[in-house]
Length: 438
Image (cartoon, rainbow, N blue to C red):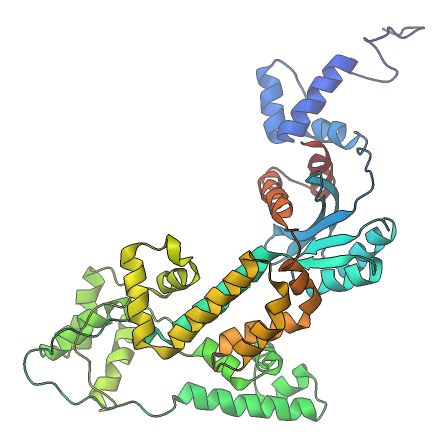
């Protein structure tokens, strides 16, 4: 029916819903988005489509935003590895302020120019956000997030421990029975290391001559990813540390293979079938290649000794506060430090950095970076050099009380919200829900 006058609280022009029903559907859309909202509305006896729910949500006005003095910024993945967005958080209220597609520094700079009241910007150590903050708010202090600093340190520790995998096992308490074959030491340098050194020198020589990465790849017959990895590495040791001592699919079963080898079983096919019954997921060729070194005289299969702890477990011992380690783990870590001087120095560096971080002693940062750079631990030295590139923000992160905890919390909310998105309306819906779903 058509009314000459609207009934207050019941009708509105050109509307198919009463204000009360429209408000109810809007709340359902805010809480559950499209498909899930349709299912809840149907259970309540309301017939509505998912596109209608999305339109109701997008029609809501953005809340008013007051002055923002402390801003948090971070990226999130719509689709990991392909499509990213950026979220801005008011660190005082822990509420989302804005969300835009992409993670370019220019978008952040444009937003900051419209909000000159910002005096602190909490971010990760992304170069794009750092440049955007510098251009858009030169008056603001940039603060590198301590969580990401510790996460990057943990990655450097894991790489270092991985290069010492052969030394992680405890020495055997007693010599094995029977004659012990003399162990032939492997060559001083593996073929892969020699090849990496040669390629690294060739790539950097051509870079010095002004060739692009694509031209270098064509000239040397290397793929673009390999050329980029070699060209971006500061030293060849950084590349070698990532390439040596890689985990192999046969590694968990080498102890069994060594024992059977010393028992006289040299048939690779038989050994392959035996470890297959133990859960080996690989193929026979990998077993043949592993045993080939013992057939050609390059070495003798060592007698199986104590199983070394996993690299990640050792990393957790080193990066955990000593007071929080169990007695057993603390004893194992002490044994490792006594057997390996490099792991001992690594643990000392990590604990010194942790004390600097928890005590907010940013004034010690330069001294700590210099100390690590002088120690021949390539992954850790690379971590320290990267800190120099963003020195002021890292120092602020280790001195000021600000952190990106509120940003990470909202990123977790985004991960849950994006599972409910669909269609081209995804970004608009996500933006509105981030702003309104408190």
